[in-house]
Length: 167
Image (cartoon, rainbow, N blue to C red; front, top):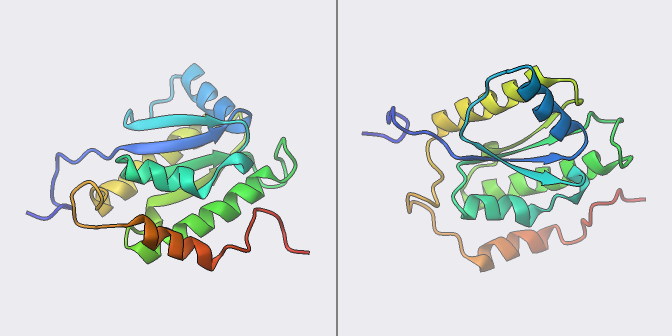
């Protein structure tokens, strides 16, 4: 029986969100009694610009099958360009996940304002459906061996990136 055919697989998903739009969207969803999958664990950040590639990788290492970030809309970040810095880090993390064999599609980012409770629920459902199709995290089922040396080698490739736009 293949992993994708396992009807009992319920993915574990970690969602990072900012205390402004991300948190408010979650709060709006709750206030409106909008249902979304219960398999999502939330981690609040002061801003998605404070996210770090290591946070994403550690979530997978600790057993998450999928990870996503909820950020303020582009051009409307409470910390000016924090969401853009977070998006750049997320794209780099996706590249690392592809290179180590975990798959960058297990990581995504959604932009929404605080009033978009329905969008918040849709993002949770979208990630849950995507990860169900992909199956469990290969690190959990022992199909992938990732060493810290391998991750560090991939990170060193892009060592010049520090979250700021090049001048």
